Length: 298
Image 1 (cartoon, rainbow, N blue to C red):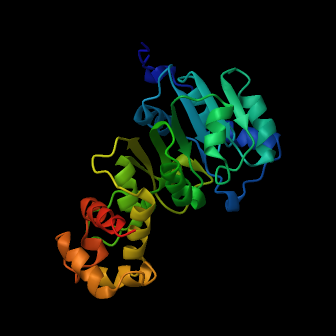
Image 2: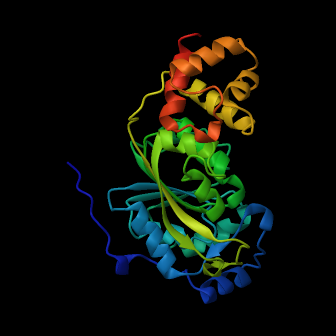
């Protein structure tokens, strides 16, 4: 039986998390930041330690990192985990990573695009049983990447990521609020979601224009099982696709008019959902119950 070996905060490698270290590295390699790739490197050791603590990385863990950058988070993870598989699509950063990761032989740099990876093939190639995902994510890939990770049904224990604060609020929003939507429902179905810390732009180089947040997803057995998860996703997206419409009208159009509207209204009422409500007032249980009822028709 494996027992997690906790890592003390003072043992986490934060040596690259300083403005001086980052400036020296990028200057010595002639590296130019690309805004299109969302390259904002951490320069604050406390924030780095908080990511590791939130992810609860131990010496028994295999960690997948997306967007290794110059290796700031990669080194911190390598100092705490058993293995680190670090994806980095920008080939210009590979020489820097080869330099900064010299002290660690438990890191594998993977030159792949996280949005295009065959994750089940990835699991087989690296002989993974379970893993944790930890990343300082480029903002532009946050939502599609995380939703894809949920839908893949991978053996992930947790996902701990740095994301734009506004996106974090969408993942954790309450029903009836403007931020509440598809991301909230789907994340809530696959995981327990929590914002661990709000992070100011000053901890990055170059600083982004918005605040960030450390966001943690603890993957869990479903407390409310969807008979057809793909149908659940269709129903949620249809409901929020026209969020100003009643749930009956939004579903009627969003599901391609495959169910007569009168029948759809009857189904909603059988689920104790008024056809006049809007999607933003329905919680996760409402959507699962509704999708399960619809699944009986197909």
